[in-house]
Image (cartoon, rainbow, N blue to C red; front, side, top):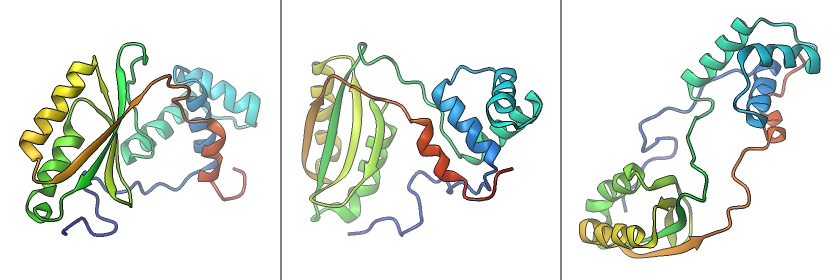
Length: 183
């Protein structure tokens, strides 16, 4: 089976190349805690909570640099009350995989229903979290995918995701991004 080489990314993006300052991590942590913070509020928090005196312009430049480098991604995720979510697992068909995998992967990744997609090991190597307005739309998506890309997969296993209990990044995990001395 042909697949991307280690280090190559199917989305065409290169991994971020960012040298974190302690300030950057604090900014990410505070934004993770409250994404609606203004630049002035962030500058005030940096000074009051972390004893880092910077202007809101410096905070803006740091955020813009991290955004442009791809350090973090911004996504709009509607309240789960508006959509149903499903976890989809795709079992690959080795017989036709070499000729068909790329288009099938692109179809899943570019689908407006795909919230999150990843590759894994095991029997079902492609997985995605998908969202639909209703069960009928979900069923139609599966039907259409099989019609277009059935040669690529042997099976799609989907599970209903209900009662989403957590969907966020906790600020504490971001502390591991900086390993140097305090700024």
